[in-house]
Image 1 (cartoon, rainbow, N blue to C red):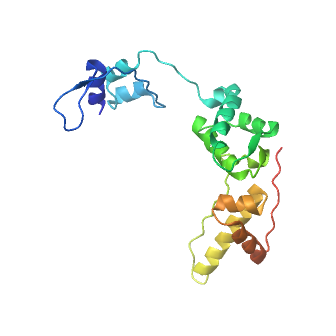
Image 2 (image 1 turned 135 degrees about the horizontal axis):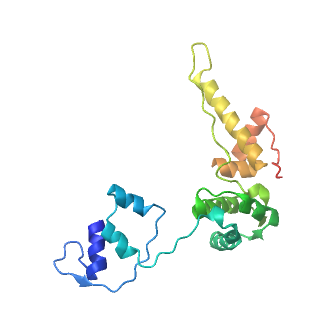
Image 3 (image 1 turned 90 degrees about the vertical axis):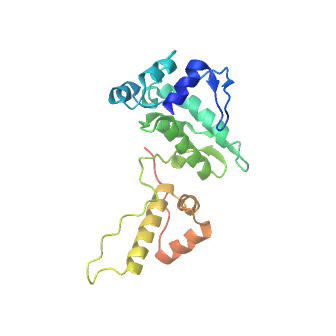
Length: 210
């Protein structure tokens, strides 16, 4: 594939699959990567001639953690994108929620920010995004704790499954603070969560932010 791309960049021609003739193309190529191409060249994983063909006007973008001042603009962009979908009446984001976003390290860069905002949009019923709607990827939410291997005379499969279900629901309720939001996170109906809460004797507690 690298050799084919190099030929296109050098000759300005492409050949369709199954075609005998080449077609001239006049295009401008914008390429992006999060890999260290110099190291890949040293390992023989990336062609050096292709690298120099692509690296005509390089723009190095620092990671999001090094440019928190860009986060408000990115938040505006993604909220405009996600709230344009039907049945979304979100007015914006609270200052406290925005501060939470600006304090995060964002190991996953812009993609992680986009995921967090899309998740928040799905949790808001109406109004603005508040701190309780911001669930960061490094928070362990609605995960099922591992069930230990059963020793003889220990839990049965039914009992172990019931315990895991209870722990998962309890954790989701602790994180999200309401049965409705926990249901969305767990991918079940609100009625299902309410029934399980009554059966298991669980209550929802709204989580607090510093």
